[in-house]
Structures are given as C-alpha cells and as structure tokens.
Length: 327
Image 1: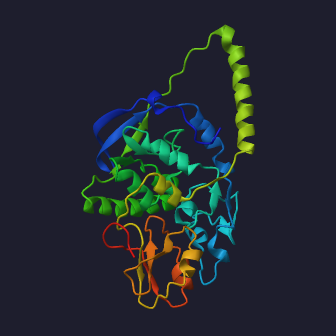
Image 2 (image 1 turned 180 degrees about the horizontal axis):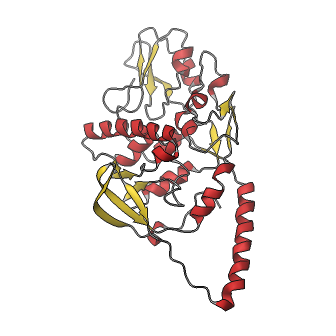
Image 3 (image 1 turned 135 degrees about the vertical axis):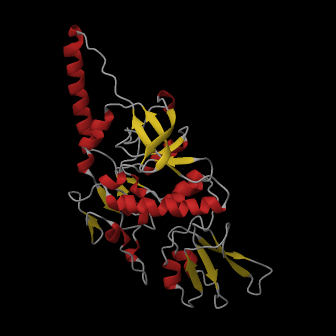
C-alpha cells in the first residue's frame, strides 16, 4: 500500500462554517472527520528517508553549479548530495527547489496532489490536520499551486506552519503570494487561507466479550504498520510530469527563453536539457531552415542550456511576461 493511498473522499464529511475569526481575518473553516492514522503518521515522522538520485542531479553537468537543496534545508540535513536521515524532518523544501526531480522520498507527492483535486472543496492540508494530507506542505511551488488554482478555487491550511516549521511557513507565504498575483492577472479567484478543524473522534464502546479480540487485532495492525514503515518505498517526483498530466496552461510564473541571432542551431541545448524543454525543428520560413522550440511548462530554470551554449545565444528569464509559449 502506498504511503498516501486513502479511501474515497466521499466517506469524509466537509462542513463549511463561514465567518470564523483567526489570525488570517475572516476565513472559511473546514471540518474533516479524523481517524487513528494521524497518530501513526506522527510516530513515523522522525523516520524520514530521502535520497538524491545522482543520475538526475545537476552536479554531473558542466558549467552548471547547483546546491539548492543544501541551501534551502532548514535542518542542514543535506551535504554533498547526501541526506542525513537523523536531521531530515521531511519538510519537502528540497523537493520544491530541485530543478530535475532528483530528490526521492517516502512521500508520494503525485498521489497527494491528485487526491487534492478530488476534494470538494479543493483544500491543501498537511498530515497534522488529516492523515490523508501531505506529510508537509513544503514541497509546494507556485507552479503547482497555479495548476490547482487556475482550474477551480483552491484553499490551503498554513495556520500551523509557523509554529511547526518557520522555514516552510516563509516559503509558502512567498509561493502563495506569487501565485495569487498571477491568478489576479488572469482574472481567477485567489488562493484562500483557511483553518481546517478536526471533528472530535468518536469512541465506540467495546463489549467485554470483544475486548480481547480487538486487542489482538490492534497488536497485529501495529506489527503490520511497523513492518510497512521499515520497507517503505521511495518515490521520485518530477513536477513537470504532474503539470503535463494536468494539462496546465502556462503563465508568467513559468520561465521564458530568448534566443539571439548568434544561435547556429547546433542542438546542444536540446540535447542537454534534462526536461526536454527545448527542441530544434525545421522551419522553411527561416533563413537557416530551423528554429528553436521552447516549452515553458517543461522548463525548470536549471540553466544547463544557458551555461553550455557555445555562442552564448540563450537568455533565461524566470519573470516571463504574458502567457503561452516563449521562444
């Protein structure tokens, strides 16, 4: 069973209560039913395991220097492309900043995001709120938020982040703000900050005759959970793949590439690009007979293309103007 497999969301009740006062002002509060898995999730949180896939890491590319995972880690758990499991708290910030999806973890972010799209209303929350939420929201980026919020209204519960992990709180503040600016420009609803309240868990009465049976069942389940934790698989998460599956429309949150006249269409950039965001195609209308095609959706601003272009013909911008393909 994957770490974030969950029962259908139709079994979870959502109550909308408007007008609750909090530090965010007037917000919407959602009530979700709880389950015992939340306790289990807390127990295993300190057993975080993350690895960096050196086959995907930028360190083996020439003319490119990247230590984003090491710089962003609030626990200083990453050094020389090795993650210290004792220090790592599974916040996911390294996953958020990695331009090639090289960070592997026990968290299946792809499934987490897909489950969010199935919620009504669409709400992002962490494991402190719901056993079916993300381990931590630190892996979210402005592009992922855009993919969710540009289709239908999105809410996110960050009310516990500042107390839990200030670095994650600061990261989410900037990513949400950037996404909201793009949403406003596109005439779409901004991301709402909410506080998700848990309903009090019910405690069913256990008949005396059933006591020992339930005790044995709980023990067996505990052993199964412990065994699963020891053999937990690692997931690789490449945001580009998820964004493409959602057929995300690009906007000014995605990079832009400018090609100068010094380009001779040698194709080195297309060959080196880790996400295949650049292709060289035939163009009968061009004097050279070729043109550079660029996909902003696939680009992660890793700078491999600009760092290795022999003619310095490429300029990468992370503050693209307008929406759609950029060349």
